Image (cartoon, rainbow, N blue to C red; front, side, top):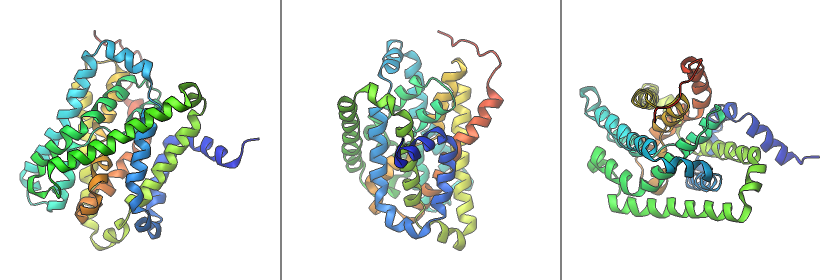
Length: 322
């Protein structure tokens, strides 16, 4: 008989898409725990990094690397499209008077790497996610170099830490998580990790839930005080994610539907938490609130993307062009 913790993880793993969406609203419903859980944000993100690298599909990544042209195209779009969209956001006339904290949040969102859960979302939707995973791995590896550069270019004086200091913190934070994940993979073995796939999916859902509680610190109070501001920030974050997904899907038209859709998920959903974790203590209030609200489209994405996939998926998917 299964013990109840494992049974819980199995159930969460089997219904991960719905569980992700529910967890963000449970996080909103527990404001009394949010402040106490806020220091857990870097911990949960670190665990996400470790799990991502422990579970990565090495044979699939190696297959992608044997024909790197498609991977380089996805990586190029992923590294340049969101910063370009962020630049447009910050320089359009009606956005120039935004609160500096919100401008910084948009810059961080535009500079962040793909969401670590993007390959997981792709797999949940039934896609072969090797290309998405390979672009995530390379995107993570370039984050300490590119993210501080883009953030500084987009937000300038609003960045509360020097670019080199941010790069150093990101290098140690991302690097130790990657090494930790590879060590875990080495110790546990790929076969054992695959055998407990659903349990690990369940752990991912639990980490998302804890992250959601911590990220919602101050959101309810701020919504009651300034509902228009909060709705505006939520709308901006949703629009940014949706626009990047749509533009990426259009730019990757020569790809087969599976690679095109799964790659666009990571280009649309960005991992703000990875950049925020090292500077959490010096983050402006409105930057944190924008970051918190930006988690809502991320958490409901599996459900929304399932409907989008059903609408866009061709009856006879054509093969990708060489």
